[in-house]
Length: 457
Ligand code: URP
Ligand code: ZN
Ligand code: ZN
Image (tube, protein in one colour):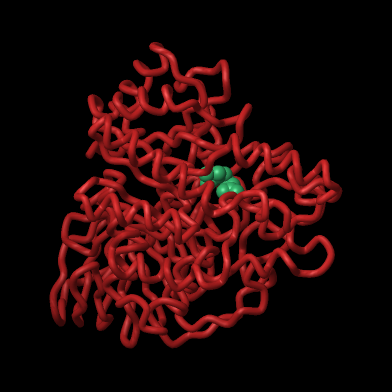
């Protein structure tokens, strides 16, 4: 199968130019002007951007969590991702206590096989560390699972102590993997949660009020300090607080390899959402929580100045009906997480590029190129270049869309951005040479996605 994409504006992290792209099989094989190669299909991209497929390095599909399971599995979640212009995800496999990393990896591979419509990789969540697990970390890195998520929050479930975190960091110094950190001080938060509940404070907003920004900043600082002592890089996931960003900025100013991602929810939503009437605040219960509205500007500045390198989604959807309601009388029982896999590209283009907060190249860098580089996928993924996978998004910068449950494809009964109008919408999506979204319609196949063996740093 060959494809010729003509007349579009090709945008990478560094360039923007009019050109044609030729795809042969799964790869981009040529870029030029007025290409005349015969092709099975010609796609006219005039007036549109030709972007590298979005890479979302933070998703939770089919994940048991908080007494429930995230509502999108690898089929519905990856199809929704494709609709939104994302062609690669890196999801999280979980080692539950008492289990081996290998068991966790096999379990998540089975969840994805035959279901994923786009390519996928895995980070491994490590919840228990011993000598055997350290050896398994090495084995996983050799098999292409080259990053590990550790938690400084959720005591008794996921949280690791500092010694274990430090040992895991040291291990990545030897095996070339990368530690991704959920940076919130879980011990302090637990005390605040118990105190709030004892005072009868059970509404969703207390989720945010018991997870102060300083608890995120303290853990971010500690994560970076431990990584500095271990002399390895560290990647802070879902950074939400300006105080935490300050810690990353300070470290980077000292030349440390500290990296961080933020997510659209922290750029477009705020604490005010928890004050919505009734139980609606539960829609936004996620960790870290949404912050004060002023934080949004600071995060945008961090994105523009490269103190934040990635925008991922932390897509972890739970329906209001039957899932979020588990915490109707106790905010601490509301499953943590919100949907976002499908809305990332349009939200960031509309709210970031169109408003002048970031450039078009930076948009590509934050949503595709930089995650590909940090997580061992570049140059196979994350750019438009001969030899790269033909993961291509034809993006209409003038098309409008109203975000909402009716217009989107995620398997969840609400949307945090319901009714928000965005300008800039994915039109056609190509995943390893196959057209998977054609003029806004899914034409791909569940199971067509492949497991990605990622490289080390
Ligand atoms: O609330 C969140 N973020 N849920 C997903 C799990 C995690 O910590 O990323
Ligand atoms: Zn997390
Ligand atoms: Zn997450």
